[in-house]
Image (tube, rainbow, N blue to C red; front, side, top):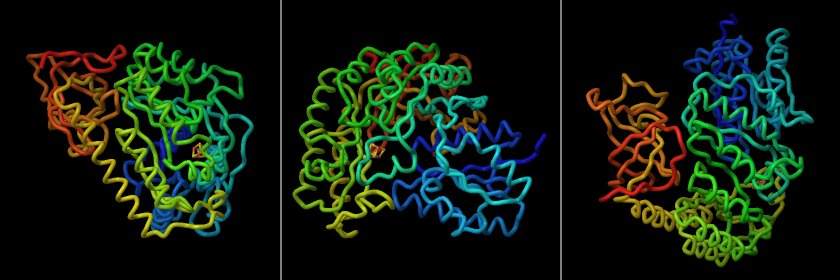
Amino acid sequence: MLNKSFYINTIGCQMNVYDSEQIAARLAAMGYQQAGVLEQADLVIVNTCTIRAKAEQKAFSFLGRLAKLKIKRPGLVIGVGGCMAQQEGHKILRRAPHIDLVFGTRAIDRLPLLISKIEDKRCRIVDVAWTETPDGLDTLPERRLDSPVSTFVTVMRGCDNFCTYCVVPHVRGRETSRHPDRIMEEIRGLVQSGAKEVTLLGQNVNSYGKKEGLLSFPELLSRVNTIEGLVRIRFTTSHPKDFGSGLINAFRSNEKVCDHIHLPVQSGSDRILKRMNRKYTKALYLDKIAKLRDTCPGIAITSDIIVGFPGETETDFADTMDLIKTVHFDGLFAFVYSDRPNAPAVQFRNKISEEEKRKRLQTLLKLQEHFTRIKNQALVGSVQPILVEGTSKKQSSGRFNRSQSTGQWTGRTTTNKIVNFYHHDNPQSGVDIYPGKVVYTRIEKAYAHSLWGKPIEVESATGGLKGEKSYAA
Ligand code: SF4
């Protein structure tokens, strides 16, 4: 028994969360245990993100904390992975002498080898090489014994789109898709170990399988839909330029595919969309939204917007505000533009001042909050099937622990809205709630970011449950 432990700090998107799980699985296969707290770990991995300047600052601030820890415990091994590691490589070792390892986005499968080398020779290593295979993702060790109710599975990596503000094609490489058999195998394993909901991840899922001549993404969804014991399927991200009727119909024909899509628009101005190299117009985006709503009237739509892209005029910003007023998104992730090294937009002139960007962001968020509240309010009085994820964050930040439960639970609607509710187990009634159960809940209150409900029926989560169940009010 190795008797060593690891700690992973994950910064960034769901793709990084998935990668951290892959890293954890490989470390577990080496004999490492997961450390309860950072201070006890023998190995610390920081899985970084470079999509925004803030994420990088977060990583370096955490690495600063680790420098102090290493003074106290010189044997501590520190590794930096993810997009920032891929982009900065040797520069990170130069900037932070307490770091032992920098490994890129396609080096996860080589991690055990790299760590063993460092342990044996106390050397410092940078591995940011691209591998031929999709990251060895198809030769995974067992991921975990107990999966969370909701979990992620990467179906493809990289991106071929080259939006001018984005570094993903540079740090994650070109698109490569996993074989559907391996994806099915992984999801079946996750379901066997407790998962009820899976989110399929890719930078542009619409391109899934195209290069390799595999299934199309809608065909993959239909296949995943047949997995017994899986209750819900989500996916992200779909690029508006490639979003079409095949995927729209997949919402209707697969009962486990949730009624929610995240379709990043980024701007409502055709001029800015062109400068971003997004390859669609506002009119085309709105046309796709209309077709989607025609086929799936109850679908929730969320999006991303970048505020203050170089050269964004008041008129361009007004076009974005107009798009928001037209679509009525269920939610928006809006960010101010920040220069990313190696992204073409770094060279663009007419940068918007920080003050102006912040002002526009506040204006936009205020408008969106109005629509989010309307969307949430519209659910009050309805009965929604909620897939229970655990106890509410207010009472528990970790995994489900029945003995600590004070009866406040949390879960999501198929439209991805958080619903909190009270339920105390009653041994006489035999009604028992735990993560993974589906609870039909009457929505009583709507807030800005969540809903409050009252459970009226509990079902075992064995089949696909979608949409609203009809109940007399
Ligand atoms: S589609 Fe554009 S924004 Fe998304 S990962 Fe690819 S390059 Fe980046």
